[in-house]
Image 1 (cartoon, rainbow, N blue to C red):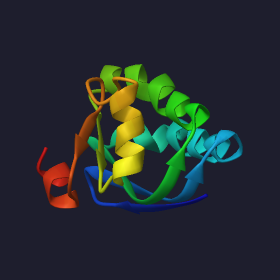
Image 2 (cartoon, rainbow, N blue to C red):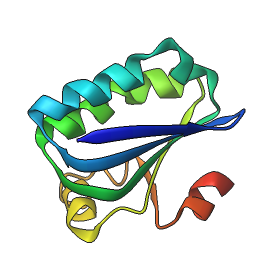
Image 3 (cartoon, helix red, strand yellow):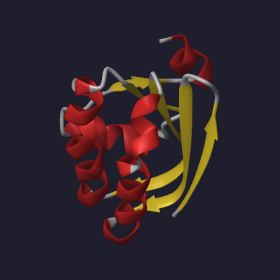
Length: 109
């Protein structure tokens, strides 16, 4: 798993590349735990190159949801592959998290 960051004044984009499983979820958790993350109005998760997500990977996002909501930071997923999106749908996480097709839509939120 490789995680790259891009940011503007109000938005942080984390691009996920590879498989988000138990071992790589630690990397993601470290990224999302950084104090700087909560200074942004939006945290966008680019899932274009995310090939797989395990329950551990999903757990990282779920564990940070409340902290983002409390800080009034919008967490938005975009460019999600169908097989990854299906996992979110099956577990009902698409109702808890904002998932949009494109980066343009994610930045417009």
